[in-house]
Length: 586
Image (cartoon, rainbow, N blue to C red):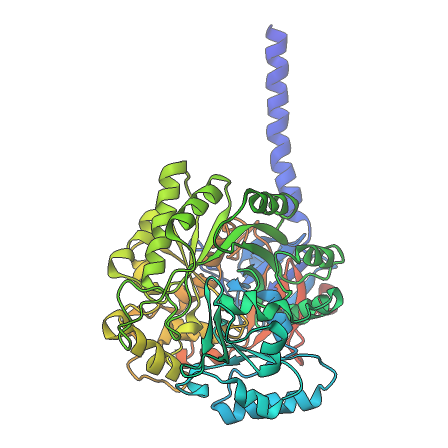
């Protein structure tokens, strides 16, 4: 007995000696990459600032002073000289339609077209230049640009009479078709409105005007537009990855597809293929879209199979996306009280409330994360109610279900985000106070509700978790204009001078957190992503200017000089050479 005890004591002593040796040996292994001479804002509250970062095996191994991190330098270590530039964790975009955005890079861009004349000029120029394309497709037109009467097929018929034209509005909730497109889809004055959608008609004749709202597009026009081929989708994804990386975005949460034949969840195998080839430069978390009136057991099993197959740090599934309502501009967002500009309207819900609650509870029981599009205050309340009931029924904790957009909210519901642990997934650039926001959106909701427009600060102040994204291709995937709006609530020209609902302004630190650690938390990845600290993925960006030292109005001018994903440089600005090996340095 004594001999056994002595032997155990010797073994423990030997283990105690070996553990420090192993730790020291690990620390002495040279880093593969060191980012040096940097002004590193880590987003780690325990160590906010540093001078250098060491990377090995795709992970951060050291953060600190030049002297301390220099101990990780070896003969083959690649050194990136940031030359005093600001270094941040690379950004996550919490709400994108990635393949849709990627496909849109090759279509007509109408985002900045100021009026109907300019829109039609661009459509005609594109159609004349691309005569081989069976469909003329584009997106981005705004409601102020087309005028008070929405859109009309006759305008498109005049410039492209022989081919179908189909143009998505900037918000992804209204579409504009010419007569040829309507004909191919079989849409006539006798075609009934589909569930959750509206075929806009001439009040005198009953004829379709060419405007389609919400699911009228999904269930009708999109059935006849040719789906892009596998090679076309791969080409688009590669272009989209470059677009994201050059703006400093390396992780995206896909909120399902919005265009014909494109959906990130259905294309997870393509992302996985790129990962296996070493070509994937964005980390993908994709949601499956739930379409009313119900979500079947077979669909739940499909999501669970995808989650089982895709669950690593590069490609992951396990979320389900709902659309509860539309948008304020077209009076389709579901409101608790009638719209101020038309009291006969209060919007409508796309799901039966009880069916939605049952489905949420069932998905919650299976451990699936839920994204719910809710723009109107009635839709936001229903989502909060459903999440609360699911937690009480299933006894679930820390599910981190999300509400997407939250453009309007009842004052009584703001505190519920913190109490229920619901993520407020918001898109700062949607609050850009241009004529659409001030003249259409604010008019429709009225002054009382407008005072709670995009209330991210109020939600955060009462303990709610806020995560930021873009909604690309609804707006650009470039996050820097969004950071600026979160901080200023103004246009780039400084309007309105006092800011749009200025009490919702955030600090630069809070805005950055929304795209980094807050976004990582929204995806259950705050332990491995979202800040610059040892053990986390080496996703870093070097900025052209220091956000903490410039006027907030200058933030949109930010350029990315270098983007690193998993320790690999995936984007470097032309003309900015910062990387040298240690041997070259010496």
